[in-house]
Each structure stands twice: as C-alpha cells, then as structure tokens.
Length: 355
Ligand SMILES: Nc1ncnc2c1ncn2[C@@H]1O[C@H](COP(=O)(O)OP(=O)(O)OP(=O)(O)O)[C@@H](O)[C@H]1O
Image 1: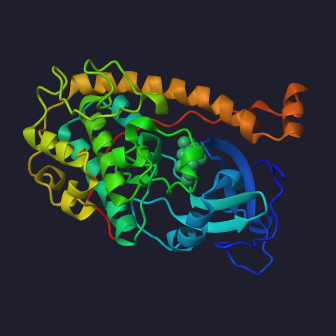
Image 2: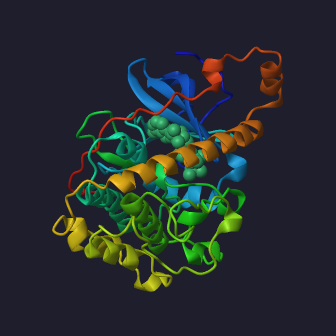
C-alpha cells in the first residue's frame, strides 16, 4: 500500500463521520492503489485499521450539489441493501468530500456478460431484478439515483454467485457533469428535474442494452451510439430492430416499452416493475442470445474507448499543478496513474434483497 499523503483534515461538515471528534482519514485508513476516476471523483483502494479493504472516493467540492450532500448524504449513509454499495464513512475538508465505500471487486455487469459462454433472457431478468431491488430501497427512502448507467452496475466479487451492486448515487451538480445522454430521462434532459421515475427510464435503457447489446434511440442497425449530450434524442420513438430483437420475448419488450415511456407519470414504479412477469422470472426465454453477446462486446469496446478519452480529460482537471509538474518530470509512478483492468468472471442472479 502506498500512502499518498492527500490533504484530508478534520471532519467538519454535514455528513461527516463523527462531527467534533477530530478524526482524520489517515487516523484509520491507509490509502492504496488507484481504482478508477469518475466524472466528479478519484477512487482509491484503502485499508481500515490495517485490515479491512474498502474504497475511498474523493469528490471535488466544486462540482458537488451542496443541497443534496446536506439533505441526503446523512440518510444515504444509513442505507443497507445487498444490491447497494455501502457508504461506510464520510470525511469533509474545505475542498474535498471523501466517502469510504464498501469495496467491490467483481467487475462491471456488461463486461462479465460479454465474456461468459452462455447468456439468456433469464440471466438478464435476474440482473434487472437485482437493480430494481436497489432502486426500490432508494426510492422508498425518498432518494433517486440520477446516474444509473452500465458503469454503475458491478459485481461485489469474482464469485460465480456474486450479487450485482449499484454504485452510490451521484452527488454532483448535474449541469456541470458530462451527462450520460442515452441514460438521461426526457424530463431530466429538459431540465425538469430527475426523480425516481427518471431512474426507471435509465433502467429501461439498461434493460434494452441487456437484451440486444446496443442503446435504444441511437441507431436502428445496432452500430450507432449517442455518445455525447449533444446527441441526446429530442423525441423517443422506440424500435426493436431485427435481427437482434427477433428472438426476444414479447414480455421483455413489454417491460422495456413501459419503462421507456416519455411521460414519467405513467412509467412503472420499482415496486410495480418487480411484479412484472418477466422480472419475476415467469416469462424470460432460456435460449442463448449469441447476437446480443457479440453486440455487447462491441458496445463495451466503444464504452472503454470513450472512458479512456474522458479519463485523460478528467485527470487534467483533477491533478494539482504540483503533481502535473511531477508527472512531467517523471516523479509519479505509473502504478499511481493507471487503474487496474477490470475482472471478467461469470454472471449469476438472485432475488431482490431487503432494504
Ligand atoms: N466501491 C468501489 N469499489 C471499487 N471500485 C470503485 C468503487 N467505487 C468506484 N470505483 C471505481 O471508480 C470508478 C469511478 O467511480 P464512480 O463512477 O462512482 O465515479 P463518478 O463518475 O465520479 O461518480 P458520480 O456519479 O458520483 O459523479 C468506477 O468506474 C470504478 O472503477
């Protein structure tokens, strides 16, 4: 483990782990390797009291939604659900907010599917059921995730039967972030606010991808992709193009159609969607979806290329001038700079857990 010596101080603000205790991050945690960079954060592996592995997500305050941090973070810290990544501790400094998270080490959902030998609607339905379990927990406590997309869906571990986990809700000011256009509900992209129904739209997009290997509304031949906010569709005519959708059950198409309704007031809630026969496991087809797996491989490759490009930009924004200079002078080790490749084991599903 490498101690990076980040300037984290006394927890002071709302949501801080133990206000007034004077605890410092470095009193209990040792920071280790870089796990990844996101739109608002840098995430490192860390060790709690030299033993328990966690993830340490350091967010820049300049892009945080202050109201959301103050109003929601204290409650989000208390949430415990088998399909939600736990927020275990919070440290607050003038410039940064640090969330100590449960460490997930099983790789992304779509990566694992693309690598496995056999993939059917049943597997997709189990994944959707677990995501719905996490959303039901959040929504029942009055929260919306607002950033549901494939990158947020990960496996807890490399174990075959590992649960799917949803990474924590976005705490950033949305207009400052590179919006994930294809996942953003119509009402949210119009600036009318994102609530639980917007998460259901995002889930509809994820479910569509799980079934055919490409995004809805992007292109009808499976090769296109709405990559940037400027590509966000202004109207949403849902199509199920062949040959990708020819073998998909009507029940799966029915769920996707309901989730991708333009009017948020008529989309199913998480509770309602959990009762859908396809989600319950009554109607998913059982045959291997070879064309979908092949499309997913291409989809993942495009995403990785996009993420790599965005990471370069994010690195330039996040790294301090001193460190930038160190890098120019060759004083920052590649280990500190390069996130490890994601693991790619196998998919298993389970029932939605309890909040
Ligand atoms: N709990 C965790 N365990 C392991 N790796 C993690 C964890 N949380 C995040 N990561 C890694 O860090 C990357 C960035 O995380 P995340 O997507 O949460 O950041 P972000 O885009 O800044 O988030 P936000 O939606 O809050 O703006 C992830 O893609 C993942 O590789």
